Length: 229
Image 1 (cartoon, rainbow, N blue to C red):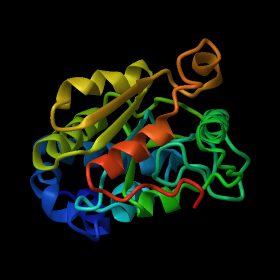
Image 2: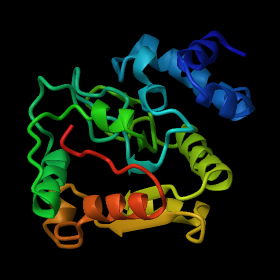
Image 3: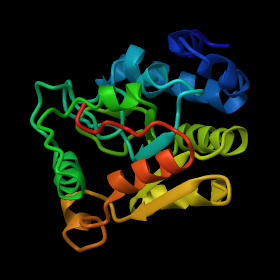
Image 4: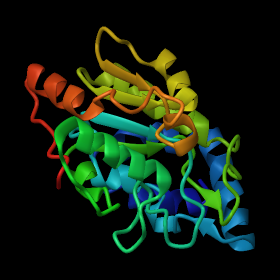
């Protein structure tokens, strides 16, 4: 196992370490590690190495009850923190997150001005990007390097090993993952992507995902998410 993959595995500090042990030791994940070693040496890559697995660090496998799937990390300096759609509190809200907050207000009258979503992750929301790293200023630059296979495997593990997980699939990219989810075991929310181009065409606003999530959680005997935190 190459050194970078070992470092990534060591950042897993909860039950995901056991759940993903065979995945991280697989040949394709070794290839991801070799690719990233070259990338982090040759380019500015986000998020920082120790934040690649933040989504898993903040939201254990046992605790995961909602999965919100993004595409790849923000590619501006300091924005990406290993959580889909989230930015540190010092940053202005990115356009997609701004639209998510508009829908949150319309749905539950919750006002959020802070873009840091770690508090959602701490409550059991796995904020998972399909691709976990990106070069500075180059969106999708780490696509098709193995990350998609990894995140598909995460979805399949959650689908098989857990019940009553809510999968939030915003946009065509995320909705491709629905084939790995059993709708009889879990709850799937489909909607347009919250990016301005997609959301303004219709299909994202007025879909009320946050109230639907909490209704399903309560109905399945789970604690609802406090979206205001």
